[in-house]
Length: 161
Image (cartoon, rainbow, N blue to C red; front, side, top):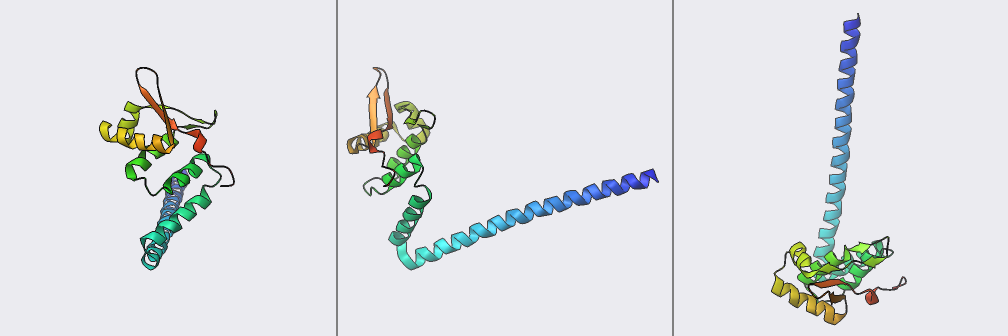
């Protein structure tokens, strides 16, 4: 009798485990279906409004969802500048990730680390950084040995922007 109860308990545990696995798979499938649905909506919007309209749609939604976040607001601000290309955005994104929420400042990153993390050649990175410094988006300083870069805090948009 005890062996039968143990087998029954083991069988029930096995069934419960399989049910949990099925529930996990269902929730993953639901998530995938939601993502596909969202992608189809984006595809349809892109087809009907063109690249410029879709870019505007994405930018507006990005601005809405990240309006209260300092780094998000800054990224939305930088992305509006049509004169900046992908490497500029890559550098700005990396520098935006260096925000210290405890101190409420952007940490400075030395040039070598920036080049390594952004996977950009030194010469090109220097050109891109010069453009960003000239526009006032990035500030630089040196310690006599290395050049350090950070987001220029004077460019922080106001809360109501």
